[in-house]
Length: 108
Length: 120
Image (cartoon, rainbow over all chains, first blue to last red; front, side, top):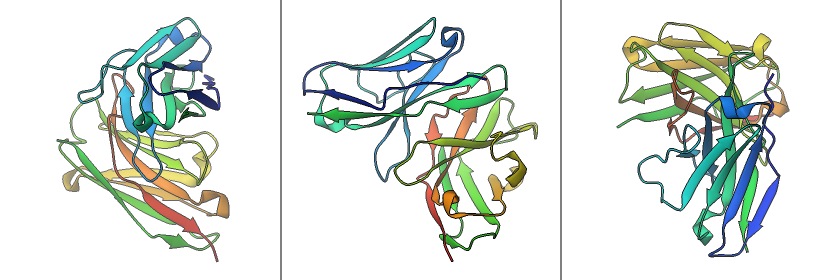
C-alpha cells in the first residue's frame, strides 16, 4: 500500500521559500493534493492535482510531483502561512485515500 | 457554494457507540462522481482518513478501523452518518466530513469539525 512520508517540520524566515516534500512509491503517477491545517480550523485545500491552485489561494503557493516525491512550495513566506501541511493521494493498490503524516511549517 | 456541518455528541463513554452526522448543502450525493469522506484528528496528532461513501452507495473504510466503522447516507436529506463502535480514549478527536471528488480524490470542502471526547 502507498505510504506518504513528510518531514515533521520545516522552518523558514519570513520572505524566504519553504519547500515541503511528500514521498511515496511512484507517487508521480497519481495526483497529490495538499491541505493547510491551522489549530481549531478546518483543513483548507491549498493545492490539488499536484500543481493546481484553488480559487483564493495566493500565487505564492505552487506544487510539483515527479517520480517518488511531490513538493509544495511556498514563496515569500508570511507569518500567516504558519500551519501544518498534509499531502494526500489515492492509493491505487488499496483503492483508498491516504494522508501523509503532516509537516509543521514554522515561520521564524 | 458547498457547505458541510458535523454534529454529534461531545462526550461519550468508553465502549459506547458514536454516531456522527454530516449535513451538507451545495451538492447532491445523488450526482455521479460525488462522495463524502470522514477524517479525524486526535489532539496534537495527524489527520487520519476514516471512511468514504460514494453517490452509488459504494463505501471505503480505513483498514485499521474497518471492523468498527459504518458509513451510510440519506440522499434526500443531504446527510451522511458515521458510526464508530467500541469507543476508547484513543478515539478522542475532532471529526471532520468533507466533499470528495471521485475523479480526482480531492477533498475541496470541509466542515468545521466536531470534537468528540471519550471519557468515563
